[in-house]
Image (cartoon, rainbow, N blue to C red; front, side, top):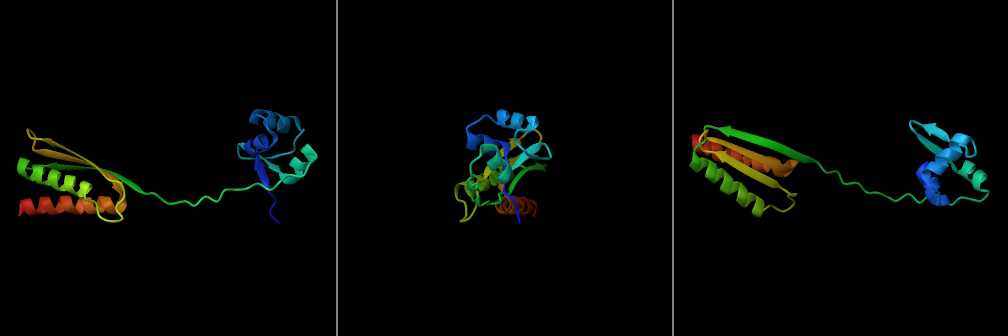
Length: 146
């Protein structure tokens, strides 16, 4: 049988008290509690004994979690011509403007240093979308090398 436990915050909210007051009651021994790690847990029976009234079961909100996986990457490309850097930047700009169905939010920044012939691309997005972007970058770079 699983016993229902309340946090000090939940007890404070139920009783209309400050959480420090509830913790003081626990420390003084007026309210029985179990310490789990750094937090107190108060059993329903102990809370009922303290208040002298039955306690309604806690209504736990059903939280449906949706996993979010994000990628943040920096792609550095050396020895790239201004024309190829422009093609990559234009392609990536188009890819962000015309995302495919199911793509999550994507953010791209491109910085080209003509003096060093260096292109830096900052990619922020989901795994799938980032992988798609990396494929586009690779295709343009490989085509330019051919």
